[in-house]
Image (cartoon, rainbow, N blue to C red; front, side, top):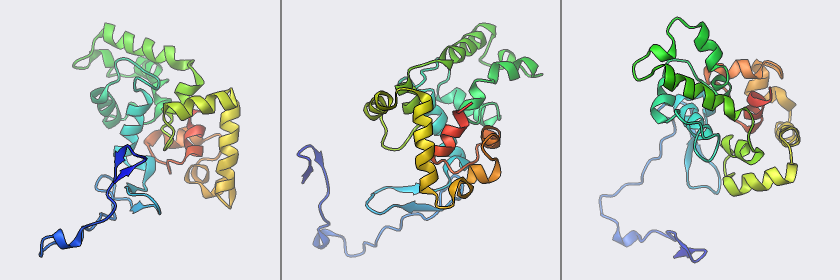
Length: 219
């Protein structure tokens, strides 16, 4: 049948058409990338890793989404460069992007001296990152990678809250209500506290909840 008269959806399994030797498919209960528990939430069809940003696969994909065309749209940060920067520890989270130029200036192995890079391409990358320190709120909300918040919901949220501060405060308030014990129930706040949030996740760790992602960017 068709869901909403548009998308085909399987309504049921025709058991009599199954091969005699067929067996039920066993969904994985652990992530093959990071080993974290994998689970399927009630009412959903997708099995997801619960490791959040502690898993390298999710951390890299979050970075790719953050710099993608409809988000920050940073030229020079395609999949290949994101994976390379992550594996070398240069960029582990969005905050690291905005300190890359400063860290590169102090580094003994400068980016412009690496294979595939040069002074011109490095300068263009740093300038592209710098130009994204200020951008439309809807783009930043979309860049956060909140589940089920695509471009249209991001625009609606931006119109509703009007400013980054108002959006962050509302989201953090909802985050506090979600955890019955307050922020101490959240991985990031247990290990870092409010002001240490950005530093604690520089190794790609964290629960991946939205309150944590907002804390990474609040400074």
